Length: 329
Image (cartoon, rainbow, N blue to C red; front, side, top):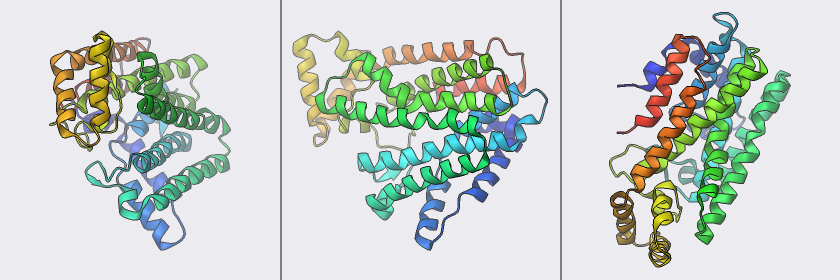
């Protein structure tokens, strides 16, 4: 069984240096803000983005050990803190009470304080990046923040209008998930002075991995036994059309589609509507078809690594692809 612990092993020292770097850099004045910051940073989750940065840096480094430098730590911090802040803001928008099995920041300190904390993390992140003088990394990474916002607005618009298309769905998950994973991979290569072609290759790798990651997340939302840290069928309750349901809607007649959309509109208050849509998606092949799309992105990600020589870092990235495809099964 592939685990994240095994995937991280080749860059254990680099990730330890990253954690120390974050602990030194992210402090706050005032007891309340300090408590909120410690709480948010202690519940960061799987750490896939900094792991991507460090594995990419190590694989692209001209000499062994070059990925342990300050630039790689800075790159990992920049992407991870953008991710952390976005999750805090997402929980406020979704009025979520839990995050990975623990009380969300907004549930513990109210939404307005959570928004301030998310803003503080972003501001502190940008300040550290600019003060470092590593403007190539800051420019490369921080542009992804706009994509996150665009994806959130587009998702809300499609949910409100029930007008999701496959093109819109893929655009949303690219902007909300894949873009930052792509930037994580390419930033690791950039941090150690890789060529422009290698930086581009790693970005494409991370983007394909990110598309697969989000599709798998959307599949797992329909699986009550999955350990996602969120309630099962949460997307349905929020009126979101993701690829499993979209795959069914695309093949449905106009009348059937209208019926399913009507049931989706009742999911926020009707558990029977949630269960009906969940079972419909399962029985009509929505999960299987979404899984095939996900596997296509995994294949694309692995192909991006074909020009690299065999190494423990390349193997770890291939295993990360397998982990994304198989997680919580």
